Amino acid sequence: MLKIGSLQLSNWLIMAPMAGITNLPFRMIVKKMGAALVTTEMISAKGLVLGQERTLNYLRSSAAEKPLSVQLFGADPAVIRDAAQLAVRKGADIIDINLGCPVKKIVKTGAGAALLREPQRIKRILSVVRNGCPVPLTAKIRAGWNPQSANAVSVARLAEDCGVDAITIHPRFASQGYTGKADWSLIGRMKEAVRIPVVGNGDVLQPSHAIEMRAKTGCDGVMIGRSAIGNPWIFKHILLLEKGIDPPSPGIGERRDLIMEHFEALSRIVGKGKGVGIMRGLLLRHTKGLPFSSSFRERITGIKDMELLVSTMRSYFSSLEGIAF
Ligand SMILES: Cc1cc2nc3c(=O)[nH]c(=O)nc-3n(C[C@H](O)[C@H](O)[C@H](O)COP(=O)(O)O)c2cc1C
Image 1 (spheres, rainbow, N blue to C red):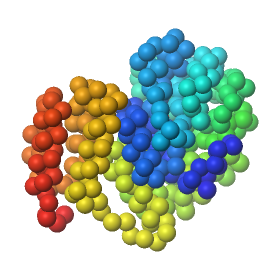
Image 2: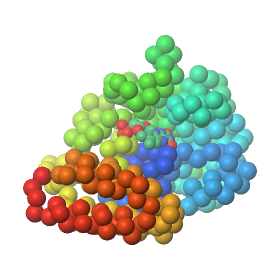
Image 3: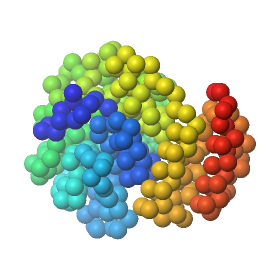
């Protein structure tokens, strides 16, 4: 079982932070599906410290999703420390520092993956936050800025020296974005280099991949991102597979009920207006590969009314009853 600092998790599976995706309703669903730890999307440390309402809203949580890891991005050690303290006051159980986001708008502020080019700044950030943060501290990194500066293992050692409690590695370079394949061998090299828990991430597309990643690399935990978007069952299925049980494919009724649950939580938390846009995007992922999904996807394009979206979704799922796929 994975232990991060003083925090004992119920298993070794972690939901990845994903901007625009891992909001409270989504996190509650994957938690129910067996993820031992869920993470907010990356939150601007500066926005929190400035008290921006929109940024503070990202800290909204619920007892049902606990424990919660709050991911912060920024470049100023004192600002990140102050934001971490605020997040802990609002209920964060773990603070995670983003050292891997390759998105231009983040990198140009010196945050995210830009920090991989400045290990001394990483050291300052992690030391200052460590000293001021009363809960376990983790960091999430990529393989390096680019192949010419592959420094993930030395950054992991540096993080360990600063008192970080666990490190997550998504073994692609920032310069790669999401192209190519995650280089799992780097997860194994990192595991050999540090004593703190190593969480492997990248390209776990089906349950067997999580088991395979752990067996091949010796990593302590596995973090799952994109494949959980349309398939939150993946956590449950990995835990079944680990016990030698072949995971069943979720039936139509189960899929529809889960989507409805998500709809309702989104409507309650973000409101129907904003929820409908998020839900349309999620429906595209949830129906990928299902029969007649392309005509359904066309039908929901541009729907702005929640009731209409729900009834279109319901009639699509009813039309699938009894079809084997
Ligand atoms: C839409 C999207 C948003 C993401 N947002 C974040 C983020 O806020 N913080 C972060 O550390 N990584 C973020 N990531 C990266 C994921 O956490 C993860 O490292 C990456 O998707 C690789 O894992 P996967 O192959 O399981 O998806 C994001 C990825 C996607 C696809």
